[in-house]
Length: 171
Picture: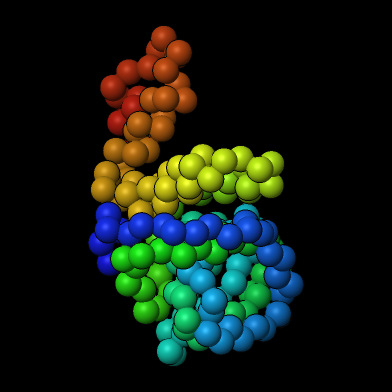
C-alpha cells in the first residue's frame, strides 16, 4: 500500500471470521472490495502472479480490490476479515504487514465486529477501524525493540524492582 496517510476509508462491510480447512483451495476472481485479514489460528498460503504470501498469526494480509489470486489452507484455522472501500488506496497486489502485537489487532477486530453488530454509530466504527489500520501500518515507525520495551514497561509498571537493566534485558 502506498502512502497510507492519504487513504480515506469510505465504507466498512460486515466483519467476518472465516474458517479454512487444511487442504482447502479457493480461487478469487475480481475481488469486490479491499480486505484486511488476520489469523487467529492456522495458516493460509496466497498465490498471486507466481508469488506466494503466507498468512499466519504474525502478519496482517491486505487484499487488493478487483484482483485475482488463489488461497490454500496449509493448516486449518480461523481468519478474521474486514472488507472495505477506500479512496487514495493504490494496491495492485496482496501485501503483508508484520504485526508487533497480533493479539491486540485481533482484539481490535473483535471490538469492531461487536460494534458493527450492536448498531454502534458509523463514526465510532470508522474510528475503531482507523485505529486498527494505525496498528497495522504505523507501529513499524518505532523499532521493534522500542515497542517491546514500551509493552514490557506498561505490563510491569507496578513492579517496584523494575530497572533499566531489566527493561533492556527484556527487549
